[in-house]
Image 1 (cartoon, rainbow, N blue to C red):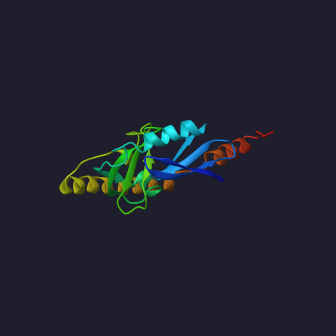
Image 2 (cartoon, one colour; image 1 turned 90 degrees about the vertical axis):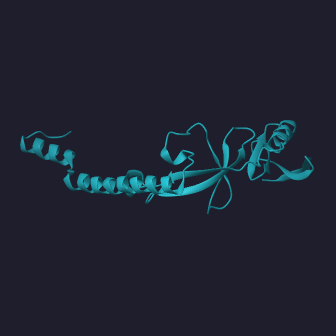
Length: 171
């Protein structure tokens, strides 16, 4: 997108861009901040750079993986992360996961609906206990999926074959 100008916000110079829809935007603390006008963009940038807004360090643990018996998510694991702040315009949490590059936004809209979005504080022993249980469940899901696949049949084919034997023709 074309850069149209530079603006200073709280003593830092930021590039200001305009997208193809005429929306102004800039990147502040790894977040894309947008506004329909330059004034609104600058106001949102002020909010995003408010003291303490992105300087938190709230540590957490999270269980990740193991969904659907290994079809998605892989083997369960415990990951550690830090909530570093709150997005200025959409209330998403700004999170940095250990071993992953950069920070990401996590929507509070879906918070708690899936196990991998929960923020937990656990001792090493508690993490080990949870991980052990999660791995057992994951292995059971894999076994269950194999049994379902083993005993599944093509019901549509069987119905069509049975109807054909009765002389019923499809249109």
